[in-house]
Structure formats: C-alpha cells, structure tokens
Length: 374
Image (tube, rainbow, N blue to C red; front, side, top):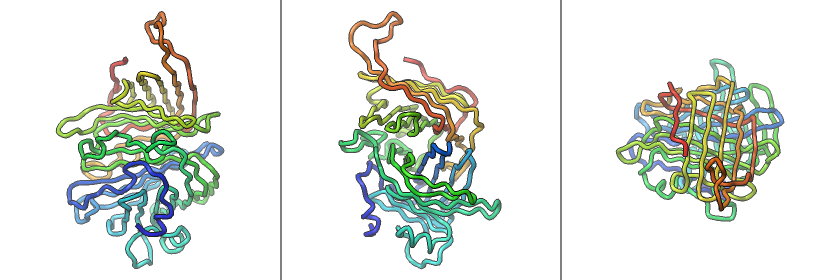
C-alpha cells in the first residue's frame, strides 16, 4: 500500500480490499458510490467495475458508469486492465484512461490526479474523484469529493459486520455483497455537462460485489436521505444466488438509526417480499424483537445500466434514484396478541423519502416476484 493511501485508511468494513486471486477464472468486482443532494432533489450514483483482470480474455476490461440528475446516464469503458489498480488490504482502486504518466497505476494525491490523468477515476473510503467524457454525445462529468464515514455496517462502537454473514469469507456464496458504508457525509463538487453542483455534508453511501458467478435476478432498495431524519440509513434487497450447486432466494432489510443497527437477515429473521417487474417494491421482516415494513414506488420509467454477466457487461439492471419510500419500524411487545392475531407492538420510527434508490436486475421480470407472507 502506498504511504498516501495508508493515510486515508479508516475503520473499514470486512471485504473492503480487492478480492481477485490472480487466477484466470471468470471474475468481476464492482463498486457503487452514491451521494444524494436534497437541496437539488437529485442524486449521483457512480458504478465502477473490472472483469477478468488477468487480461487477454473475451470480457477483460473495466467500466465506469454514472446515473446522474433525473436518472440521466453516462458510461465509459476502460479496456486496458493494466491501467487498473486496487488495494488488497483496504478500500482503494482506480482505472486510468488517457494519461501521460509512465508509472504503474496507483493512488495519486487528488491534485496530481487532476493534473495528470485526463480520463479515469480513483476512489477510497474517503475520496471519490474522476473525469469521464463521451466523444459521441459530448457529455462529460468531472467530480471530486471527500467522504466522512458515519456508519459502516453494524453498531457504531462494535466490530463491523459482513453483509452476507460469516460464510461470505468463503467462496460458497457468489457473488459476494458488502455494504462498505451505510452512511457518510460528502463534501466537494460535481460538474455534470457544465452544470456545477457544490455540496457540503451530503448523504453518501457505498457498497461492492465480487465473484466468479453472476446474480440471476435481484431487487434493491437504498436510502439515507429521509425527510426530517438525518440519522437514518436503509439498505434492503434480495435475489437468487448460487450456493455451491444450487440456487436460493434470500433477502434482507437493515437500517442504522441513531447509533443502532437493526438487522433483518435470513439467519435471524423472517423476510418476505412482493416486487413488481417495475414500479412497486414491498418488503416485510420480523425477528424476535422488531419488525419492519418498506413500501417503495416510482412513476419514473427508470434507466437501464450495465452490470457484469456471464457474457460481459450488459443492460440488465433498471434503476431510479427518485423513488418514493415509506418505512415503519416497530418494537414487538410481550403479552397477549391483538384481536387480529398479530403480536402487540409499538412504532419506533416512521420515515419517508422521495430520493430513494430502487432497482430490479437480471430476470425474468415478466411477473410479480412474491414470497409467502408470515
């Protein structure tokens, strides 16, 4: 690790480092950084990926995508895997496109990157910086912002957790998935096609996935910008994943609220969902102490983005960052059940947002995906 990058290291979640083992098997690793700008009512999602980094394979290469204001979209590919770098010990990676530098790709001080790398990006736990330009459309985006992590993944004062549990340290479940930072505060600027967005302490989020197998079908809900609740971050999702030689459908709902982590995952909770092909996401979960309900909706058509597949990057994921979301968290109370047969409970939290991330991916999505309600 370079001295410059080591200075940026913070208390990080598991799986923050790069996972590729150097082999020639099919492999991808992808990162997702998002900031939400409530003053502008907009959001920027940066999606970075590398496939078959050994090079010389049919799908070897990298990409950077941005889902910008009003779900607009920008994408550039970086075919040369030798211009990609990533740190195995901590969160740090980047890909150089046009540059006059003749050194091995590595983390650069932001001012050096800005002056020497004409196209590319670099990101760490505390920085996201880059420049993309599409010569076909003339679209471009410059960005540079610093991040102050608030919540990783787990209770604030405890060792941070693996999103997929202890078994995620073994290549049993693929792809792996890790929320790197459930909530942080971003300060900096983004130039989107000449329009400058400057921000201070904007809600920020990051996650990653990796592996040699590719998800077949999934859904996802994310929000850390709720009306009147600055200390609340939610991520939920589910999908069909490979486990050794079979497929299983799993889902989770997790939130950080006022310093506490509420975790509803398959090994400690019941989770159910009803997901439309597009437009409606409903989830419920219950464990021994709490229950939670989410309702996400959108009238937006969304935007298709590329995701790694067995046959390379493909438009098989539909997203919006302008979803409506309602959340209710309840504490279960002991004693007699209510007349309707449900366990008595009290509401801890009710929140809503119009800047939620909503997504469906893979397929097929020709009918409702519903599980049995508990």
